[in-house]
Amino acid sequence: MLNIFVTDLNERMKYTFDFIFKERGVRYKLWYNYNEFIHLNEPRLNYSNTIFEDVLTIEPSSVLYDKDIGNYAIDKNLFYKEYCLSFNGKTDPIASVFYILTRMEEYTTIQRDKWGRFEGKNSVLYRFGWHEQVICDRWALDFIYWLKEKGIIKPHIKKPHVRILPTFDIDNAYAYKHKGIWRTILSNTKDFLLGRQKRLIERQKVQTGSHRDPYDTYDRIYALKEEGIDFKMFWLLGDFATYDRNISHRHKRHRRLIQRMRTACEIGIHPSVKSNNYEFFLHSEIERLEKIILNRVHFSRQHYLILKLPSTYETLIEQEITADYTMGFADICGFRLGTSKPVKWFNLKENTETNLMLHPFAFMDGTLNEYLKLSPVEAMAKIASLHGEVAEFGGEFSFIWHNETIGDYGKWKGWSEVFDFSIRINDAI
Image 1 (cartoon, rainbow, N blue to C red):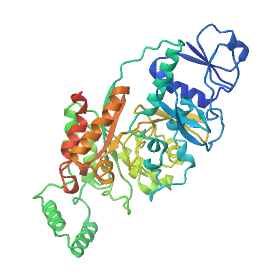
Image 2: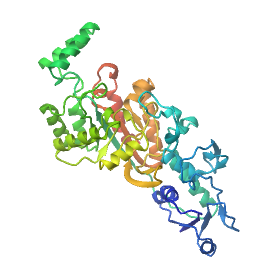
Image 3: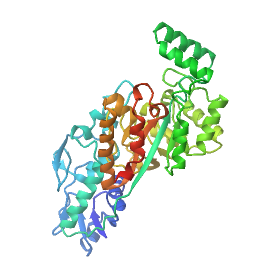
Image 4: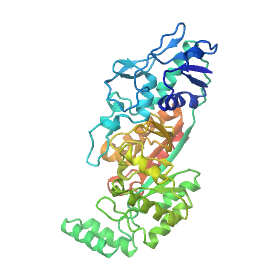
């Protein structure tokens, strides 16, 4: 048992030390009573500015002791064998874990893209080149091995386990089918005016039944079940709008498609863009999905990965969502939470750990192709590198594909091979 002295037994302390020690099988206890702590005979660590004789000490930054969301002068410094964050000049691997896990920087920054999203390229992780590392796990192990070298603990680190978790966002169930007469007329008119003859011909062939809709890759997705691969789908059911363009949730063919896919995997809600500003729409969309699948909906991923802390997660909790899969960046690959392990969301506004479980993802198809402009071969190399990081430290290797990106159609020609590589990457190690 490792005994740790702190001058404030708060939620920040418990949340951070739980992540560092519990996952790695190290028992610990926090103490704030000076007289009781000095008489302990078991291993001791001082994480405070209190002075002890013959007690190993880390002089803390103020991050875990603060009650508010602070603005700190952030830099990096070497702790043991890993560089971690320093806050106002104090090198603190423990506070570094908390800072990244809670996404503290996202509460204070004003830098946003056109969607109101915090971009990965503006993160501390990207600034120091840590975005493709599970850096919180690295800091946790670095700290534990430092304690081991000091003779404080003798850890027995478990062999890491990797779970492959493909996920699919269904933003637009079909390219041409079931769009209704007015959407079809408008689309044909637009394609005609813009000279997009190929799309006009494609649409006609699909609607006459001579060609398969290019977004209809559901047989391939369904086959994952038969291959023994667990996966999840997130379905957009918002009313038609500029950025929410799926076919109607009332369409019988659409409902049957969802019901069919429900027999192969769990389906979560993919909240519409406008639901970010109006909770009523989120509630309505969840109800729609529940009526279609005849089951409760308990997990979610934001459409376009639009995430505003803390309001997005507070709203999801209000709607009884218990797991979210949004934690990743659109513009870069990597680990937004500094880990690939699911963690509970810590609400910094309330200074409390919630029951909302966050499942981070490592990459999205659009990031590889549209943002980073990688070729399929380059994309597979990037995926292999990200998987190697998770394989070394353990966790979920989760990633995002879309039904339209795995069918070798248009700008996604050749990407079905990348998809196959991603779902079978565990077999290669």
